[in-house]
Image (cartoon, rainbow, N blue to C red):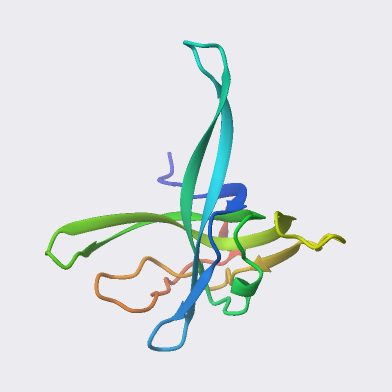
Length: 155
């Protein structure tokens, strides 16, 4: 059996805060925001339906102009991958952060749309370089892997 793995995330939810874009020292845009996803579950004790909300931190690389459109309440669809990184806090304790690195983002609308409704749009992240890799500890910008093109995929 071939040694293969998959790291793929699909999220459809609403932004919990306005997106924020910062730049690495070399000028690469890093946009961050949070998405809320909600599911309905039935309480076994009471039989009532309840909503449970999960929050997801999302990172979007090299899209410096998109933050103006990513405002609290807007509905978005994200395709990407999970990334876990670590850092040492000011007291020297190791902290871990898991976030979704977005490869594609589709603006779907949601709260805050104008009366006429805004059209959705797709922002695709560059796939030719495989997208940014997790930052090395202490590194200020992403590192890119040498990856095979789509033509090399056996299916």
